[in-house]
Amino acid sequence: MKSSTAASAGGKRYPALYIAPSLALILAIVVFPIVYTAYISLTNMNLYHWADFHVIGLGNYARALGKLDSGFFGALWTTLIWTVVNMALQLALGFLIALGLNSRRLRAKRLFKTLLMFPWAMPAYVSILIWRVGVYNTEFGLLNRVLTQVGLEKVQVLASNIPAFFACLALNLWMALPFMIMMFDGALKAIDRCLFESVYLDGAGFIRQNLYVTVPCVVPIMAPAAVMTTFITFKQFDILYLLTMQKGSLTGATLETVITYAHNNAFVSNNYGLSAAVSIVIFGIIVLLSLLTNRSVREDGERGSGQARVKRGRMAPVLPGAVDGQRK
Image (cartoon, rainbow, N blue to C red; front, side, top):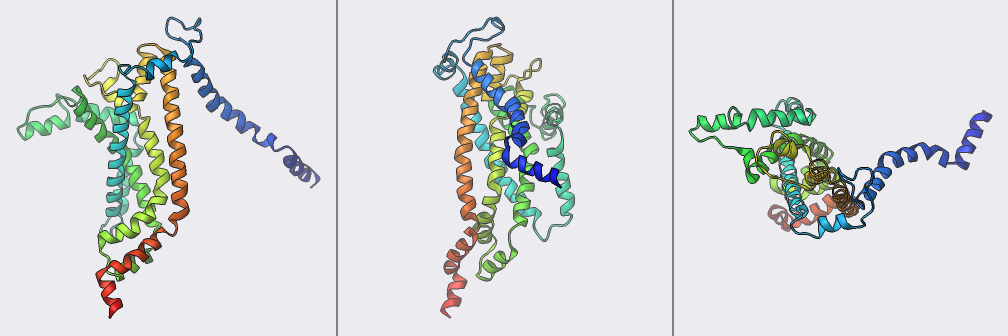
């Protein structure tokens, strides 16, 4: 009894002893790599200066950000387009498919949900290999087989940037959409059914029910998942690189994002200082976006609980049936 009391008293006096292991782990695997990368970004480290590199200041940042033909801004523009298009499609399709899965008329819902999880649970490399060889292959891929069956010519999807972009987009949706659907499905199940019954009695149809009840209730729940998926999409590497830029099997497309740009500078050009500078710039962009989105999510969460009731209160007077009923 005395020992437990003494341990409790010691914990109150020296709380740092309890958090020291966690802090040491965070410093070792999070803080130190960031600090060391920032240091390398200020040097001329490359294949020829591996041991005798020296500090050159902000030269790598000037090379990456100060020259329009450096390739960084083109890669950043491609990354932004990739992120925006992916997230728009994931949110729209995920919401619509989740609505369909929650329909009372749909049977075998569990079977459909189980099948949807296979692409998401499959290892990324396996999925990419299946699509590259089994779908996009010029000679015996499924896509060209379908085209030849309908009388069209074969296409080299991965040979140029625009077709390769949509090919990578289709694969990313196949891999990432199940997660978004399941998140929307959980958010839809959390909505109180009384809200739908109330607006239905006021004369609201399917579209108005979703506009004034479903969307306001789902947004605060889905915001963290959408933010997390946005960051994952922004720094995505495997799909774009393995489909188009893998060494030994280049396809012809030059679809480069900021992550593949940093990778190529480090492991193809062997310019580790420039690659580290690009990595720090990417890190700064992600931190800035995190601060902005976390603030927005926090504000939405504070007012999200009563948002559906406010929307419903505003909607009722403008519904023709409700207005006529009140006048009578």
